[in-house]
Image (cartoon, rainbow, N blue to C red; front, side, top):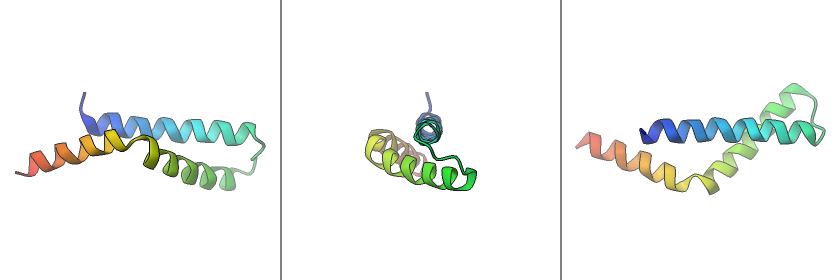
Length: 65
């Protein structure tokens, strides 16, 4: 599967999980919930998705040559 699709799907999945967990933990205001979920999923993706991010970078670099 194309690395960009895998990376994007993983980011969307992390955002959905973050939304769900924060909602369960009691964050009910929609704007605060969304901002917090973006922040949490951003940090989580930086830590958890480094392998996928490297694959995307490699694919883009290879296509530019």
